[in-house]
Amino acid sequence: MPLGLRRKKNKSRESSNLVENEEVGGHATGSSVKSTVNGAGLPPPPANLRPKLVFHTQLAHGSPTGRIEGFSNVKELYGKIADTFNLSPPEILFCTLNTHKIDMEKLLGGQIGLEDFIFAHIKGIKKEVEVFKSEEALGLTITDNGAGYAFIKRIKEGSVVDNVKVISVGDHIECINGKNIVGTRHYEVARMLKELPKEQKFTLKLVEPMKAFEMLEPRSKGAKPASENKLGTGRGTLRLRAKGPATVEEVPTEFEEKAVKKVDDLLESYMGIRDTELAATMVEVGRDKKNPDEFAMALDEALGDFAFPDEFVFDVWGAIGDAKQGRL
Image (spheres, rainbow, N blue to C red):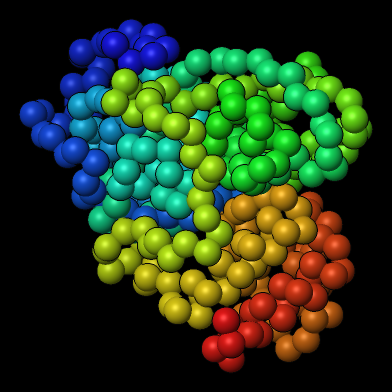
């Protein structure tokens, strides 16, 4: 039995959305994604405005195959998956595309390829760990699931956290020094960790994704920022939006892919987070702006909650310009 397995089965509820006798073995028939800035946003759009698309899904630790449709953002997606497998939506930590493994390069965000298969990773073992902050930087990169859970996306080799072997990529950070941070955005969690005093101990309460026995393996350091892995093989993607209906779009252009990757790298460098949907939104905002001041004003209007530093905004503007000129 997989570790932490505690779901109650309800055959009558599951049967309507599950595919009989279909084995997938980690291959896909569904879509490709990048992360959402906020899973909540405006009220769901009317059903007639939502793309009529069907995606296949499984629980990452093992389950029958289900079919889901009719969602416009990450929270609605989690709700559809939860209904299919008789779960509570808060049990879902995050999803990966086309792999059941905890692979941060395949993390579902704000775009799903039309042929991607969705694997949902649900809560497993809880753990509490004490860490001595011997250096200013802990070596963590934080992201979130678009529905209120911040989790560890990368651990820098040789860092403070790398030496605490119980902490792994994919762990949801539930509490810092006894303070519950569920619902706190990733950039705020990164700031809280950065501001912890040096040469003192602090405590983390973590929840790791449930694993089947065959998935138990040495912990991963997480996604490599320079990876060229691409999600999905379909000719289009479903773009999940924090505000407004989901839309079917063409596969991102080479300019968009390079610009988004560079901006995501800048987010990690300046803020300790990775968020491809946030990066994609910034690229979209800056695409037609004529100078850094115009870009900064547009960012404030679109993403005012973030209060980006001026140096970061200038570097993002430069990265978008380099991508346009083919210099990335």
